[in-house]
Image (tube, rainbow, N blue to C red; front, side, top):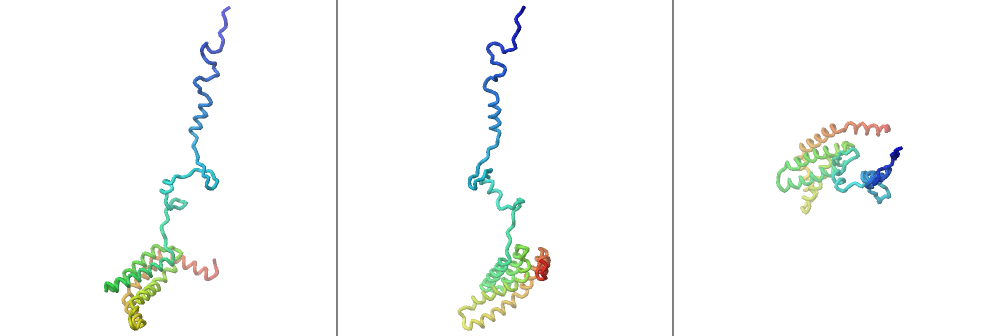
Length: 202
């Protein structure tokens, strides 16, 4: 009777349940370890998370939560200050160059810029401010020009009268442009809000 062939491995080979060359569960676990993403622990606040690189943070810049960059806006006081300083500089330049139109042109440009850049909530305060801002600027400029002269008050009053007569058309133009731009940017809404507050309907 011939001998039965056993189901075991042939001589010189490892049993079937042993994998050769060290391949097995260790290799699969190592591959999983290599494929697993690494995280960086941020120990500044004791929290674990991924730390963004400085290049990525610098590329984003000043953004909002939606990713859009906010444009700079002037406050109401800042806009009035811009008009005052511009009008003062224009008056001094006009005195040096003897060009009467310089203060009016600079005042009008300042009104256009501030009306376009001021915050919508400050449109109402800006709309009534250009004449007052120019008057403050021209008083300061004429006070500087009249300083050291005999009869300071008389020279100041004469200078103010002459300057306001020259600037009157530009003053109306700049104020009208501010009102027009403010209407398109939401001035009626500010008026309604003011009316509700005055009537006690917050």
